[in-house]
Length: 153
Image (cartoon, rainbow, N blue to C red; front, side):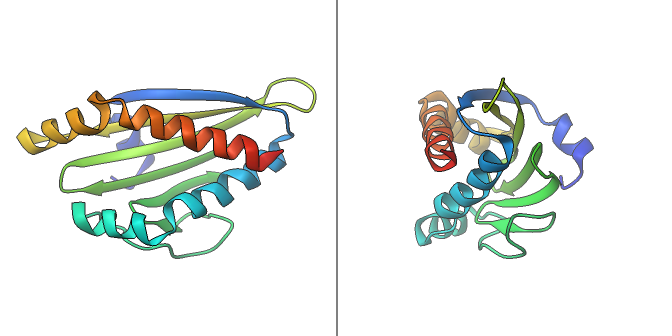
C-alpha cells in the first residue's frame, strides 16, 4: 500500500480542517515540525513496535520528502506547500493520512487532514472500535491541527 492508487482505495474515515492565519510556507514548515515532534519521540516508537508497524523509527531527509519515515508512517508523496501523503500499516490496519494546504484569503491558509484506513478481520474491527469509535482518533487529529496552527503563527 505504498502507491497513491492503493491509498485512494482505502476507505474514507474522516477529515479535519482548520484555517491558519499564516501563509502556506509557514504552515508547510509547521506541518513538518509538528509531525517530527509528535511522532518522533520514544512514546511513538514504542507504540509502533507494540502494534507491529512497518516503519518504527524516524529516518530520511528533513524537511519530510518521499521515503522519509516517522514511527508508524512513510512519506509516499510530497507536493511542497500543497500536499503531504503519509501511509502506514500494522497488524490491525493499513492507513493513510493526507495533509492538503490551500489559500483561504490574504495571509490565511486552510489545512485539511484526511484519514483513510482499512481494519481487516476481527482484530482490525476491535482496533477500529478502540481508536475511531471512542473518538480518540478525532481528538488526536484536532490536537495535531491545533499544534500546527500554533507553530505556524
